[in-house]
Length: 445
Ligand code: GUN
Ligand code: ZN
Image (tube, rainbow, N blue to C red; front, side):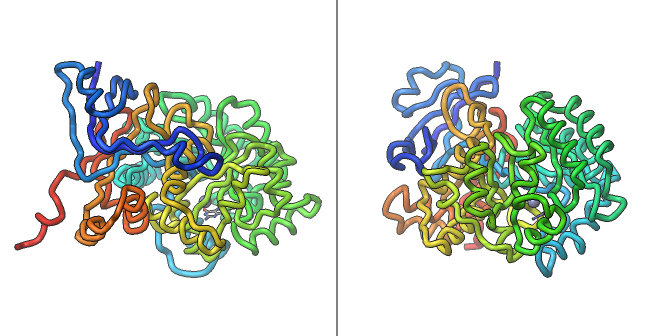
């Protein structure tokens, strides 16, 4: 039986601060110990109490000047776009045609897909992200490649083969039947194998015929426990295009709704331009908006109003996501920085307490995986990130002026990025360790 214990300041949530007072659900232990056994949290609490309970032979790893929390979750991302992050020019549709659809054609080659999946997952772990929901490409090999690497790291990841049968280069299209058959075979192979989970993945309404969306809806319904991921209402030109392609539907979300693609575990990328009626329908069906602010600013798509989406009268689930390669950072800390700015533009300030909820338990709840990951408690899978509060000279300096822990957290989400990741644990195993050299030791004198 493998056992380890980690010690330091930890932060976790017992509920949703958008629904209850933040102080009631945000739990901070300034000197805590988390005992991990066989990949799960066995026990946790103040160090003074835990020390008496620890097995005698156990190794306790102590992290100073850090905060320990549940590993971050990236609820919408495209691993094949790792090679086109930061591609210059234009908005969604032009960007897809000029860069994305060119890069994705390389993923017919499984060796290429494996190489990119390896870089992608290592970057995620280096950024403290322990679960992702990723689009692959139309090629089933690109899904196998991803899951094979994911399985090696034993990550709880979600992935799926992109379904596209129109408005894309011929080399990137399948058919309604081929897309269904290939996806079904991948579900049988991967869904529920260890920590791997499958998502039925029609890219978005413009690249699927009604027949393909119908097939995707049927497949999702008959494949218990799988996810569904797509895009909705990201860009105003895209919304207008969907109106032309699906004139008989009430709106963009209605296209998915009529083909049985709304419900719990349906993850809709962006949702910036959804109408009030569409938000109400999402709330009713339990679907999720995955909020991707670095991508939305980069492509000039707009900015989601998270507080409006989550309002108590008709709450819509909201998860956080990078949406690489339109997103510009692997770091969920940087994603929080941009989430804060999007909220500011909507006239809402997002407190650090709310922000770190969104980055951990909130995203897990939005994806219905919060019984497994997203918060720290006995029985939970031990996916954990340790964030160094002072990895750079400026953060070290700035932190010395912070008046309390809340302010430290706000500095962390504003100035922080992958440099803050001190260590990442997946199912209780240390998978990334930056080392403990303090910033001050890196200068000549
Ligand atoms: N809409 C359809 N496909 C994509 C994609 O790959 N990235 C983004 N940001 N939006 C999309
Ligand atoms: Zn996307």
